[in-house]
Length: 564
Image (cartoon, rainbow, N blue to C red; front, side, top):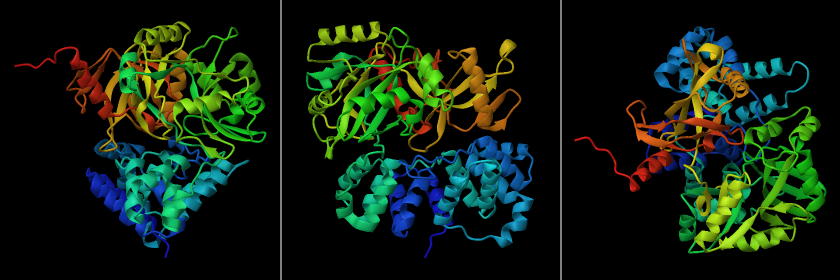
């Protein structure tokens, strides 16, 4: 029997109402057990705030501005009413639920509701994506109106959350892996391995339901299906990295570029961004470089794309992001902003899964298959002085710092561990999310130029503000940011707008200090934006727990002020 979408929404309410990890896992496991096999992947994706599986390149391409206009049309309420509901809840979905439930139009149509199912919602998302050509915007809007009009106020809450990709239940992929393990009685390590390789826990959950442990054991890499990236922790200096890696490690230049994953099969090449989005068409010279130089029939490689000037010297990150966002005038952009590719890892080669191999062996295989593509500059050493000289060389060459990679470390997709470290010679910047902005003064009075910066609380899923800044962006970037924030606005106040947490920025600061100004009781001192991280999602931004760790670590070298 088809599972109602209402059951998924009710699960969301239960997950949102508890901070107990084991209870969340039990609730999700019970829900997964109740589903038909074909419902499992769509349900898992939606519970995690995605309309489609992670590997799927389709996007709904429905802005908050469009969605809010549709919402106003359906409910026939003044937008101030929504703003008031948002002020009380701080959650876009919950505000939608309140307004939709109280709407006169809603009450009139409630008697004629047809129960939505999980599969009907997935098919509705697919129809929205498939709509193209002349008049497609109007047709998309009609499809969304139809979907929301069929939903109860509780279902609307979670449909809105999926549309904007902001679930905020505190239930993340790691907990979903545990729920899948419990639901289908499969050891967690098998689920985690399958999830790492496939890059999507929804697909893993479906195979677990349909084929059990044996099916998961057969999951392998598939060229053109992007793999979750291995992530690095921060290290204070080269000495810390050497200590963690038992006295010897592979140091590599950390370029001020964008990470890419390159998939090749025969002469076909696809390039995926850090967000696992297909950016092949925007990077034609990288496509050609990989096609000509990687001689293997099948391969999955990782590298860094750097924007350079005519002399080959690196130029600032924001110029590179213009290339990644480009969909028109690509040839002209390639002429103005040349790109250079550096390779640093290989995950798959002609049918062989390489991720379990030690890093040093993967590097050897990479060096035999890179053709004329430059590999990242590397120094393998256990000597602190040598490593510090290498770090200075990287900085002098215009790069960010170093990576340190454990010589015998495997590649662990989606995992942030101590096998890889990032080392920069200044306070480590934070990747934060803009949750609100204020209109400027003087010549900036028409621009949203003072930004509220927030990090996600891993326990609750909520974003907590840790600072505010008007520093760092150029006038051109502020104008573009104003346009983007207007489209994400949830509530307008006389001097401020509240926005959907979507835009990630890299933020430098002098110190994290205790502050009663914000709910988290911490604030960044002298915060300034150093770049816009369009290569990262809000989910990938830094979290409150990490910021609290940095705050506490500051007192390892100086005393903590405690008023008597």
